Image (cartoon, rainbow, N blue to C red):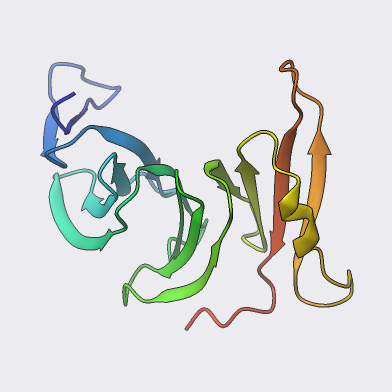
Length: 170
């Protein structure tokens, strides 16, 4: 776990690109739909953006202080969602590096995923999260929806669906 990422083009596995991502281990990665942009997250909370085809670092986005557990890039390549082991969720404008939206949960976030249309974000929280349900707002207002998901574990997983349609992405 030396913090390096090695990319192999699937057409020619003899060529590779090595990214010196972090001094700690890489904990999460996400490509944009074109395969040209790569976001990496590390155990020490760093988020970096790379040109995947060349390995060039284009932005050192954040130092969040907690392990990055999930990254997702919107289909249009303009927005990055990130989550951390200590419960931070942030939505970033990739070009400006500014935070569009953020929440802090009382428990850790395991992973996140953006819907194909970019209008909803699914956040999988640590098991045994019950206090988080108090965050439910009027369903007609801007706020999260909770879904209880059966799992193979003794405890159910909790997935939060966050409506992103009312956010200003500029």
